[in-house]
Length: 114
Image (cartoon, rainbow, N blue to C red; front, side):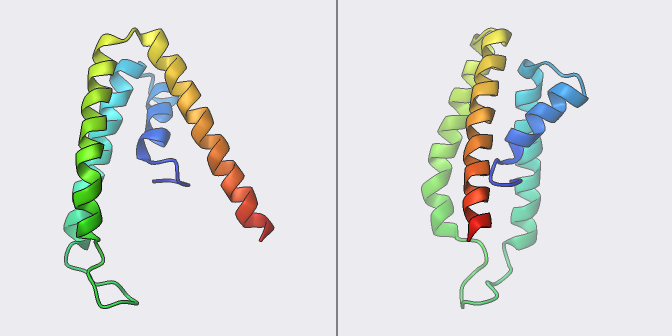
């Protein structure tokens, strides 16, 4: 997750603009890329301990709460990617990434002023 945007928010534009993929192909490709990174990070960090507290580095309880909703969102997104036209996907992607970038910039400016 770069700058609070998330891996897909960075990878999809890179896959579209730099590598020339269509949004129909860039979205699932970013999903599998993020999944691969998540598996690698889980394997590397699952046995580590938190440096300041006596607990595991990975918050397994939080994962149990978040993952069902995350998986449901991924399934809905995959379905929408399949049925929606490419132009609508592109417009929705631009709107979502603009909103996310705006919120990230607003948070960065707020942190910078402190």
